[in-house]
Amino acid sequence: MLVCISCGESYPREEVVYRCRRCGDLLEARISPGGVFRLDTLIGRVHSMWRYRELLPSFFNRIVSLGEGYTTLVKADKLAKVVGVREFYVKLEGLNPTGSFKDRGMSVGVSMACMIGAKSVVCASTGNTSASLAAYAARAGLECQVYIPEGKIAWGKLFQARMFGAKIYQVAGSFDDALKRVMARGGEDAYILNSVNPWRIEGQKTAAFELWEQMGGKTDYVVALPVGNSGNIAAYWKGFKELQEHGLINDTPRLVGVQAEGASPIAEMLTRGLESLPDWPNPETIATAIRIGRPINWKKGVRAIRDSGGTAVKARDEEILDALRLLATTEGIATEPAGATPIAGVKKLVEEGWLGRDEKVICIATGNMLKDTNEALVSWNKPQKGD
Image (cartoon, rainbow, N blue to C red):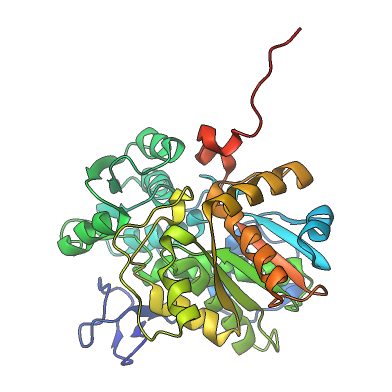
C-alpha cells in the first residue's frame, strides 16, 4: 500500500495517487517481504537489482527490466590518500543500462505502469530521468512524454531520449518549471514517473542492498551522494532502514548529501537550521543533473540526512570540476559532473573535520561521463599539435 509520510493516510497500491489527498504531502510505498532474506540466499542469483526480490514488489504481472543494478563498487586507494580518509570506494552507477542510477527506479515504475494498464508515461527531467524513462517505456511498449528545461540539458541525455522515441517538450525556465507543468496535468493522460511517484524509490533503494552485500554485510561507512530532487538519498535511507527492520544490520551508515552551491536549498536549510526549504528560483550549476531549486522530495531527503546522523554540504562548480578531474586522473574512473560532487563534498568535510582521517567512505558516481561531454569539463587538457 501507499502511506502518507506526514498524516499516515493510506491508499491501495494500485491507486494512481502522487500526493496525499488529506494533507497534500508525499507518499511512501510499503510492501510485505516476499520470503526469508539473508546474504546466503543471494548465492547464484541474477546479477541485477531483482536479486533482492523478497524486498521488492512481487505483485507485478510483468517485470520490465534491462538488467539494471548490481553495479561495480571500486576501491580507490589513491583517491583515499589524496582526500585524506582510510578507505574510499566509488559505486559506478553509470554502468546501468542507460548510464545512470535512474534505471533502478524506472524498472519498478514502468512495471507498475503496466500493471495498472497505463498506455503512456511522462516525466520532467534534467536529462537522466528522460533517457531512462524513454528506454524503459520503449521496452514496455508504452508511449513516453518528456518535459525538459529548454537549453539546460546535456546533449548526450537529450540524444538518448530522442533515440528511444520519446515525445519531447521543451519548457522555458528550469527543471522546476518543467515539473510544475507535469504535476499540474496530474497525470490526466499519462502515468507520472518522476520521483514523486513512490514506486520509483522502491527500485532505487536496491543500491543500499548492494552496498550491504558488496561490503560483506557491514555498514561501518559513510555514503555520500549528489542531491538534486532528493529522491535518491531518500531511497538509500529507505533501503538501509529495511535491512535494519529485517534484522540484517544493527547500525545504518551516515548519509551525506552534496549539492552544487548554485542549487543548494537543502544544504542551505540544514546548515542554517531552518525548518522549511528556502526559495531558490534560479538554480545554476555545471552539474546539470542536480540543477534543481525546488526538490519535490526534500522532506524525505532531509529526514534521511537527519535520521542517519549525516549532513549536507555545498560544492562550488570549481570544486566539482577539480573532483571530476581528480577521480579520472588518479583512478581511471569518470562520471558526469553531478557524480563527482560527492568527492568534492567529502574532501571539504575532511578539511573541516566533520569526517575523520580513519573514516571509510563510499561515493556514488550517479551517471556515465559520456552523458555530458561539455568542453569545459576537459578544458584543462587541450590537444597539442603533433610533430
